[in-house]
Image (cartoon, rainbow, N blue to C red):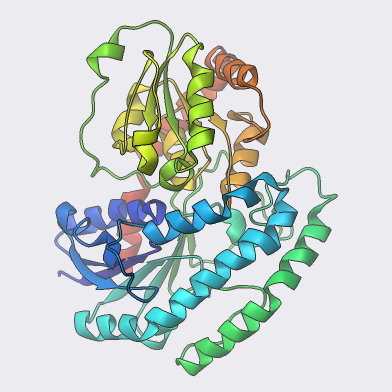
Length: 422
C-alpha cells in the first residue's frame, strides 16, 4: 500500500541530496514523498518529481534568495575562523552555528506543525543536526538520519565531533570536550526548555538532537567507520553509503577526453567553493600538474579562471562525474567522501569546517587519502599528494574492493527497505 513520507533535510545541498537518493527509491516504489524545504529551494525538488512544502528558518529577506543563500552568507562571513585550530573554532564557529540553527528551529516550529497536520504523513524522515520539536510532538513515527560524520553520535572511543583529532592520540580530547560543553551549555538549556514548551521531550544531556525511538540511520562505509566503546542500539543501522541516481548524465568534455595524465575532480562543495582565493590557489597549483582537472566552480564561478588543462561549471552532477575520474580533491564533506569511496576513488582532503575535519582525518589515518593543511600547504605538496596516491597500487586495490562491496548493496535501497518496514 502507498504511504506518505515526509523528508525534512537541513537547508544545504549535502543533506538534501542524501534524502533525494532515498526518497527517489521510495517514490519509484509507489509512495507519496513530500519534501519540506526552505523557500529558497522552491522548485528544485519538484523538478525531480517530488511534492514540496515550503517553510522559512528566518524572516523573509528584502531581496530574492538563491537556494541555501543563508548558509552561503554565513560561511562567507565566518570564513576567517577556518584558519584557526578546531578547539578555537568552538566559540567562534561551532557554537554560533548551533545558535543560528536553533533560532531557525524556533522560528519554523509552528509552520512545521502546520505542514505535518496538512500532509498527514505515515512517517517523517529528518536529516538535521538538531531536534525540531514539532516532529516529536506530532506523535508520528520518525526517522533520524545522520548524514554527517558518525562522530556526531558521541562515544568514548570516538574523537570529539568537529575536532579532526586522530583516533590513536587522545592527548587533546579532554580539553576539547571541556571547551565544547562549556561553549554550548546555555544554548542546550534554553533549547531543551523550548522543546518541552512545544510538546517534545527535553534534550538528552549534551545533545541538541534526540535519538528516534523508531529508526536511526547513518552512512559511513565499514572500512572507515569507528570502533565504539558502546555499540549503537538496535534501532541504529549503517547504510554504508547512499549514492543517489537522480543526477543528470555526464561525459568527459571532448577537450579533455584524450589529454595527458590522469583525470582529477576538484570540488570544495557548494559552500567551500565560495572562497575564491582558496579555489583559485588550488586551480593554479594544479595547472602545472600534468593532469586534467574537472572543476566544480560553485557560486562564485564567474570569478575563477581555469587554465587549458581544466574545464568546469557552477554545478556538476557529482555522482555522474565520479565514475570517470581517477582522484578527487575535496573539502571532505560526508557525501563526497562516501560517494568517492563508493566509486573507488582516492582523495586529497582540504577540510574547511564542521565534520569535514573528522572525515579528512579518518580517510588519512585509514590510508585511503591524504589530508593537507587547507590554508597552509604549498602547491608542490598538493601535486605531490596527488601523484603519490595515483601511483599507489595497494591503495587502488583496497578502494576497488570497498567500491565493489558498496555498489553491491546500495544504501538508498537499504534505507527505503527500513522505512517501509517502519
